[in-house]
Length: 119
Image 1 (tube, one colour):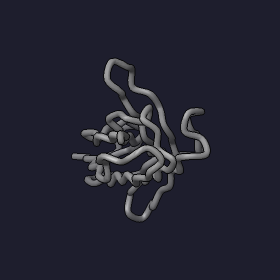
Image 2 (cartoon, rainbow, N blue to C red):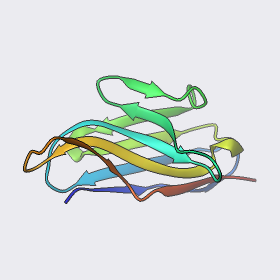
Image 3 (cartoon, rainbow, N blue to C red):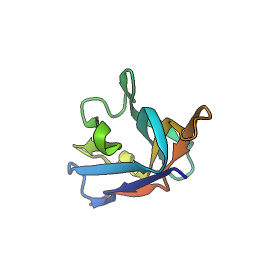
């Protein structure tokens, strides 16, 4: 069984910072990519940042958010600076990985963590 557990969400004022963490656990053979998506009320889930062979960011967060990985800990981080009200959403961790016994690459999701940017 593979699990992704997120932490670090909360309430922050505009201009503030938060750091999200997501740790993968279970019988994992290899992780190809880990990333973050978000879903605001009434909107579709959207990519925020992904770290794999390349690192990509949504245009709306470039220069403000930084994704990083600790492969030994199977953990991905999202450092969010200069937060804006429009960053308010549930943030979901995603990992494309192969579990053991090996049966192909699959996408796994965390349970989500709420980020609220408000004064």
